[in-house]
Amino acid sequence: MVAALSPSRASDFKNCPMLYRFRVIDRLPSLPSAAAARGTLVHAVLERLFDLPAEERTPAAAAALVPEQWARLVDEEPELARVLDADDDGAPDGWYAQAVVLINRWFTLEDPQCLEPAERELYVEAEVDGLILRGFVDRLDVAPDGAMRVVDYKTGRSPSELFERSSLFQMKFYALVLWRTRGVVPRMLQLVYLGNGEIVRYLPDEADLLATERNIQSLWAAIQRSAETGDWRPRTSKLCDWCDYRDLCPAWGGTPPPLPADAEARATDPQVVGRAIPADD
Image (cartoon, rainbow, N blue to C red; front, side, top):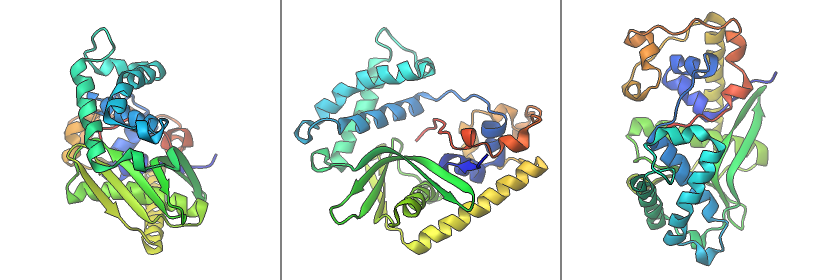
């Protein structure tokens, strides 16, 4: 079995080893919130909008995609429907309207009639010293000269400097994988925050990505140590207020479930470590 890691699971461990344990080892279910479900819907609409000819990529066309994309998502993942107080059409009109507000804001930041993405929802994977790094890139733009721009949509507001570092880690993770697979360092990493209409851009270089690679290797070594010792101690922060597992966390007076017999193997299971789990943007 080859071990694997995604940026979301790497961020889980960086933020709180106990959260990593709950998700990867205990495999506790986590119902996406309404905000996370809305983020999934907005991502789906922005992906499918580029199926249309350039001149038809308008705010009205994007808004028209919202109900059909929601229906498709619920068909694929029925549990999404349970996060809303749904009416007869599968989601409240007001909730649709909130998604449309975010989509319309995107049109003030980028012009899809002038964009022809090379890839959308691109699965990327590379092996680094026996560890598979993998994930999904929202959008990859490639210029005529081959320069790559990695784009990620965030349906929340642009974060503080502390949480911006976490978002940039995710983007550098993707950039590292693209560099290792394509031999070219992406020219730009671009985070598009739809909550407040801000774009954050970063220009990586080889030194950045080598540092990211070392960071990931150190992180993976720490995960392996925790797996061997069974020490998944919690790390408290403001993120605890949004944690699905707070009632089970010993930092808040809870009792985690007993570690399964195969806990060490589960800690590096690629089927879990590499799987995306919905989270609020």
